[in-house]
Image 1 (tube, rainbow over the protein chains, first blue to last red):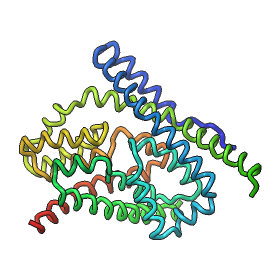
Image 2 (cartoon, one colour; image 1 turned 135 degrees about the vertical axis):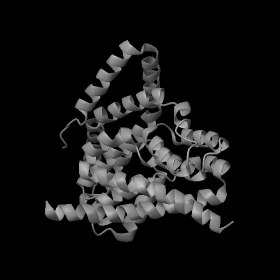
Image 3 (cartoon, rainbow over the protein chains, first blue to last red; image 1 turned 90 degrees about the horizontal axis):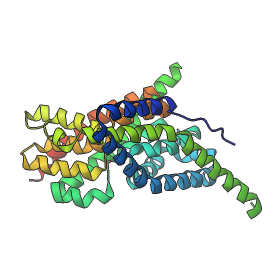
Image 4 (cartoon, each protein chain N blue to C red; image 1 turned 45 degrees about the vertical axis):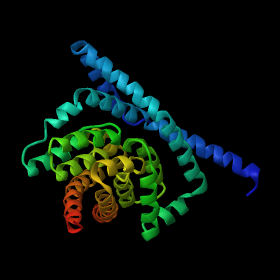
Length: 169
Length: 146
């Protein structure tokens, strides 16, 4: 079973220290910031729960060999397609997905698909009506098509760049 | 595989998933803490001050301010609407709203810690230029249909 190794303890301590300093320098804004933090955490709880369940399901149903097959070096166009769909459907801030992606990476998810996933998240289905209202339908369609094209391009470039260094390493 | 054999495996998958989540929880808490500070000090009013110069400068402003700012994607559209009414170019608004959801200076430490510095640098440089290129291409393509 996995060992529990915490990441980001130093960074968290730095942020806590910043809040302490800010509290003495600018109490009102620090309280506002803390209120924002608590509001963000409340909205993130269901997303955290969803990601924990999704990661468990992926680990349960997709064994490392299958992850390699669907999202590994030889995953091909199907891997890109599933990744884009996943990216578009994923909700919440980018950083909440890092854990799941890191988990899948350990089982063979290739770097290019991580980049593709993270960029295709720019296609925000729930925000499309708002985007259409502000920028219009043609703009919204064209922009989102380009986002998907560039998500694929980024994945391809990242794979080439990372494999170049993997060969050197 | 029998049900009795499957149950401990799924339980193990859930425990591993919870452990994975808790292992990066300090990192996420740090990022949320940073987001709180940024949302307090970098307000929409401050962001709107970055715009209203030349198109080129507005595009750079849009990309950088979108990357620095944080919060729900809908906020970027609401700010963009205000900027549009001020006459800010569509190029700049596109880079701003795109950078808001694809780039994140606040998230860089977390991304580097999990995926490595090299991957993070490459991905963010590519995302930065993609954001600018997509904005240009979208507006050029849009012009072709008019």
